[in-house]
Image 1 (cartoon, rainbow, N blue to C red):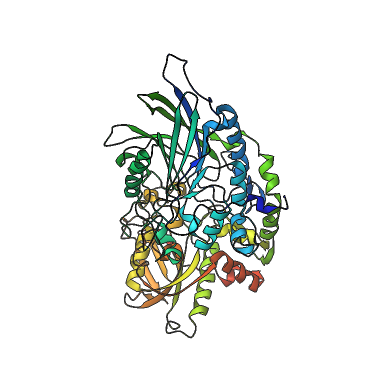
Image 2: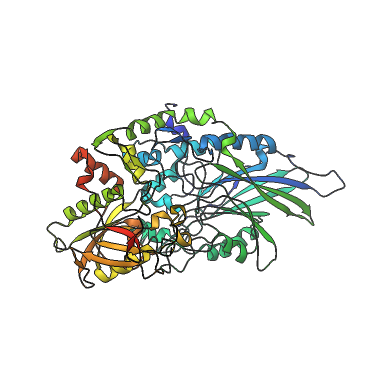
Length: 600
């Protein structure tokens, strides 16, 4: 690792809220992909590369397993691999004929990013340069859209990261809450010189996710607002065209489904990329993010122009690289996009770029040492393998920690007498805490998100509705019908992280019944639940702010919250105990039944 870290710094084009980026990159060398000869029209070939949802993956390394990353499909991940792919494309197309973009969720997601946000934070005086800034600067990104997870560590951390990047962080719909002016650069423009013709002007519009207003409410409320992607694209695309843009690309941290995970809490659609393509004329291509899907090419016809807009979403964690290949022709005094096609390059087909692995070797080793710290001893192996459909002690551990933290926090307050319940979700299907020594990485693999803890007051009736909503996660299965656990969950696409255990209550989930009528034998303290009784529910901040659209919780009275991550609280709890014994936290709270008969 070079000693002079400061060589990776640049001054941001944005020094505060409400300042938009304008400007044009230096033009590359002339003549790169011109033409069909003197008699035909001038032509130009441009390639726009894109990644998304990198989530702090620089190395092809699984910090939770302390081993090279591997999965059943043989995928490889990390910016070191992407760097090799990018170099290949630049060699094929000519670097001067390419752009490199990202669609957001960059600085959260691995122990590497957590370490440089919390353990050795980039915001400290004289602090380090963020590994993602170092890697992306070295690879040569041109522009990056803001993702919702950029806000997880607060605005100060995001602004420091922005300062360390040599590329703009774009967010046309991230605006100052008071002035409604852009708080980040809305767009980026670059000109590509063509011999014997005017330059080709390419504009990149960055759009982020309105759900930030819910998910990171604690950081952004009263400071930033996040209007809908469709309305902001309709505002900015005509401006970019009027500024002479021949090509308009949108980098959108938003999926294509047209759905939202937050119900009707916001008037804006979470996954709006296809809507933008359909409703806003003047867009040539959209780099899609947020959904962690792989879409090589999706063509969406614009309702007003009848022209197809090409969308592509490369797989997350730097496992794929999207290529948009544009063919332009110069006719009647201007450049026209003649065709666009999208394709994917696969990170598993190449080796790591040693430039990137060597650049960040020191940071990587620090994080490996950090996550391998031993904090306790487990008396038994705990696993999430069956936690989606069986009450698993490993999830009970999360709830026990959350209950203890909230009880202690509320001691001496007017709410100290209320019973404390807790919610937790089976985030991972592969997490395991082995018997024997327990490390930070074991516990981090159990709680993979940087969520924090909130206490809300809810009634018995509200909790009943909460549980009914959670139980929609299961596929209706008739009594006597065979049970295939691979098909039992995720009804209507509900992800695992939007299925909740609630500790402190006892209940059956009758999966033979229709959704909305599944919670049976709901008791508290051995008696039927009193709908009027009040409880304190310990919830993560995602759920507390409305993530997953669970009923009542977002509007419930908040009586306490903190900024310490739940995973840190788990590590502290285990460290204080020294021994991780299921007898200290395991409880039988719920089970699946069919017409009164247990499924398992």
